[in-house]
Length: 91
Image (cartoon, rainbow, N blue to C red):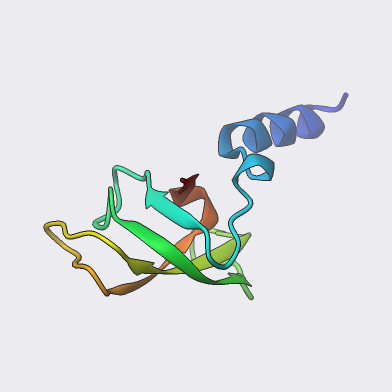
């Protein structure tokens, strides 16, 4: 295994993307403690590809969700877009 392949596999394990396949109608929780919307819960409205890498080379998918709870920087009914690795599927 090349050094690149090893590092790539390590990153995939950390993000756990396969286990977190969110789709329309799923409920999600923001698990990113560095995000201003940390602990927001929502219902997925749309999943779409990130068209171009951001300034921090972000790739993957965006998840648009409607917030179902209130917090210090968000309230029920807000519509938020987050990268898939910031969210966790919940029941």
